[in-house]
Length: 221
Image 1 (cartoon, rainbow, N blue to C red):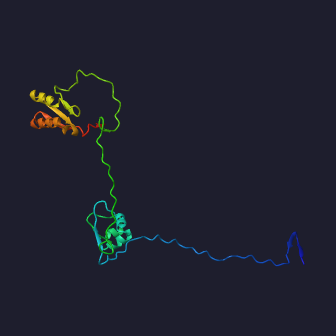
Image 2: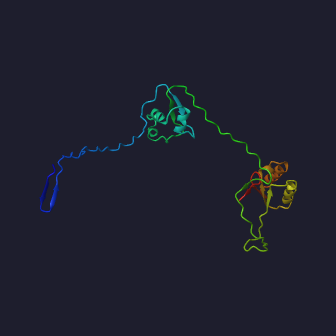
Image 3: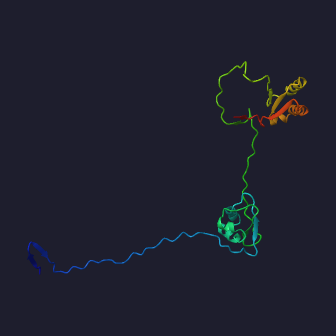
């Protein structure tokens, strides 16, 4: 039965059916501290009594050796930690000449490394090789006088094209005691006329200098 009580201007309603008390969860939430990330280090255990050893050469890494000998970097570090402590701390520390234990049993043969196939380079054709991009040439100029240039002239010859007049030109220079610099290409110096020119240069070091004009008359920028 509902009971209504009037007290002043306040109305109080009482529900005869007892309501269930609200359920309050008091379970405490456990706080779990994050665990530190484990650091993988090689355990400095001694290598096995009978093992395969390998002498480090240029280009080797601990990772490549692990692949070649079918093991892991960590195992290589563990086997060699006692002899090379720095290797146990850092897998990138590897020096040429170190003798490493690479297998737990003797006579293990490493997997062969693939040799890159190098295609032969064909000799250049046409006018020769090029390098870089040449800028556009400026306008032509005719110079009658060069201030402060002096009376000397540097005479040069490029030995990179026709060779049939080469010996005659050299003989003329020798006969008239004219100094010159000869820029020879490698391919022209290997021709019969080129060999004669080089012989004349050797015989007259007081007149001639020889300079490098590349192997194939490259257009160098």
